Length: 212
Length: 179
Image (cartoon, rainbow over all chains, first blue to last red):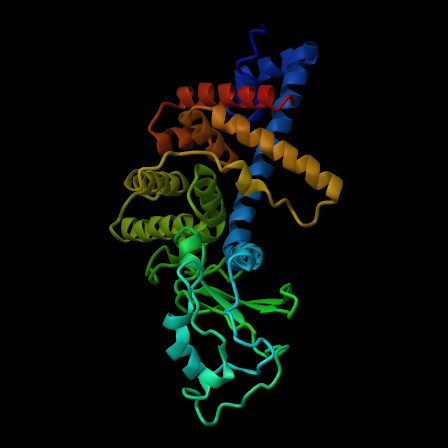
C-alpha cells in the first residue's frame, strides 16, 4: 500500500500542513493508483452530500404531507370493507316470512323494537333492524312511516353501514385523533355489492342491515 | 413552529449587540444544522426544536458575554449534545436514516436518473449503517462544512483522531459503494 494513502482524504479536505500537502501533490503526479483513489473519494463525498441533502428534503416532504397516513388508512379501510362484503353473505339468513310475497315495511322504530326477538344466535352478525311481515309490524310501526309495497324493494340509503374506529386498526398517531372511516355498502337484490362509499367521520363502531 | 417554506425568522429576542451577527448565523447555519440532525436520525420536528434551542442558548451565551470564537463549532456542539440527550431520553440509538426515508427522490430527476439515485442512496444508507458512530458523526459534520478542528471540538476528540476517522470512513464508503 502506498505510504500516502492515509493522507489523501485530508489532502482533499485541505487539512494538511503546507509542506505535507506539497508532498502529496508531488506524489499524485507520479502515482496513478492514488489519483484513482482521490477521484473515488471525491465522488463518494459528493454522493454522500447528495444523500444528506435528500434525507433533509425527504423529511420536509413527509412533514408537508401528513395526509399520506390518512390516505393509507382509507385504503386499508376499503380493503377491510371489501372483505366484509364477501364474509357476511355466507352467514346472514333473511328471516323466514309466512308469505314472502307480502309487503315489507322497515322503519327505525320497528328496528328498535324487533332487534332482539328476531335474530338467531347462530347468525353471527349484529343486527339493528330486521324485516318483519306487514301484519306484525302494523302493531308497532309509526303512523307517519311510508310503507314500501314491494318485495323487490331497493332502499335509497345504504343498507349496511360499517363504522371502523381507525385507532383500532392503525398505530397511534397514524390517523388524526377521533377520525373514523365509515364504509357505506349498498347490496343489490341479487346479493352482490352495488355501491361502496368510504367517508371519514366521528362515530362509534356500528353495523346495521336492512334486507328484504 | 415555522415551516421551511416560511422566511426563517430568528427565533430569538432582539439583541442589543451582535443581533445582526446572530441573524446572519441563523440564516447561514440553520439548514446545515437541520441536515446534520435529520441524518443523525432525528425527526424533522425534533431537529427543528433542537435548532431553535441551540440558537436560544447562543443568545444567552452571547448576552452573558460568552466567547464569540468559533460560534459555528459551538452551535454544532450544542445541537449535537441536545440531539444526544433527546435520543437518550427516548431510549433510541443514533442511526443513519433508513432506506425507507429515502424512497422519494428529487422530483426533477428523470425516471432513469431517479432509479440510479435511489440505488446509490440505498447503497450509501447501507454503508452508513456499517460505520461506527464516531465515523458517521465525523462524516456528517464534514459534510456540514466543518473543519477537522471544529469537528474535534463538537465531538470532544483530538483533531488527529478526526483526521484518521474521516479517512477511514470515506474509504469504507468508497469500498462499500464500489465508487
